[in-house]
Length: 253
Image (cartoon, rainbow, N blue to C red):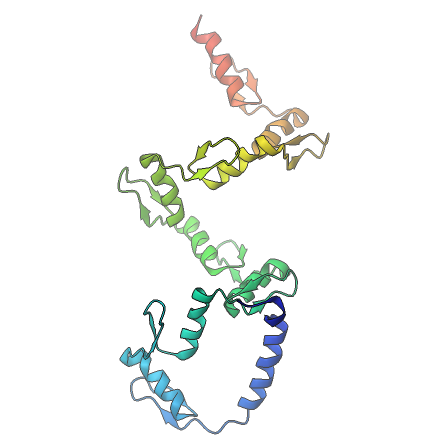
């Protein structure tokens, strides 16, 4: 198991990469050529390694799970899933990662970098898969379909959550009262009934709420907005529940 002291920070990795880059700059001419795709290499062993992408050869095998790899460093990286080693450390929060790529992605939570931009609306994202998911809001594409009711979803996670409405599965359990929920976010909201946490604060009167929609409803007491209107007598209400209660006065007449 790695320790914090043995982990490399992103700064360490960048300094090493800069040094390696200066060594590569004096490399000899690329004289080894792949006959399959014409890609060229300066070293014969690099060409041999590349050829595995064409032959499918995977000579490096994990002794733990028998998974095979075409490159030794891929096997080495995979072995961390078994050993738990996390050699790359974030300089900001000391969180450690098994892959350098994961550290680089994590750093965006500190820098605010969002390198992936939507060409339709210019919204930016820190992760490519989030951009891809967002693009579907423009195209209307919903590739994940429920086999029970044919409802379609943008993301597989949304389909998975939806399936619980058919199966009745509730995998998230409250440790305080044993109540179970189909979604993690619902459990988190429920936990506030035990902790008393009220993270949503009104900027007008400083009143605090455990749920965002409660704050949103409360804000209408300041703005005077009443979005729910009775179709019978045009009376308006702040909450939908208020309109529903009112409607009974018409049905009972």
